[in-house]
Length: 199
Image (cartoon, rainbow, N blue to C red; front, side, top):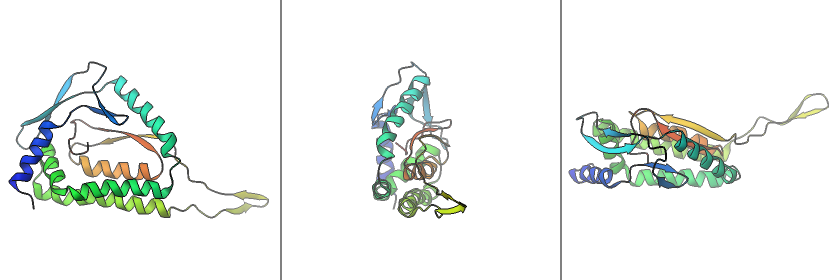
């Protein structure tokens, strides 16, 4: 159950969080000298934090990092990918109330509505963790006389993904889970406002 302590912890988490870009496993300041933007709770128009906007330099760094990560990630087994997705779901499940409180402040939704969304995000991660372990290709066969045909599923590379401001955690999970399950990597960004709960 959400309490005033949970909401206070969420506000404190937002205030004390490093608000910048997360690229190549680290928080980094923008090199482009871009402007910053306020992260505003649309329910009461309070400013939760201020974040730097990214530019072409940050996008390039993020894509380069995702390409480097893909070399190793694409070689992982379905079981290894599933374990990562399950761990992500476990983190969400262990912090449902905090995620809900941060998400509510970030997008201005009532807590009751957000409490229903958070389990959907972890369920998506769990679903894809199971799906990656059971993925199958159509049968290998001789569809043309004298020629053996087969389909091999392989990662395709780096995926650019955008999440909306009003469902940031749930939509991020819906994008992250299948991309990682398939052995790809991604650069994730938001449309409009910088989200708090997906970092």
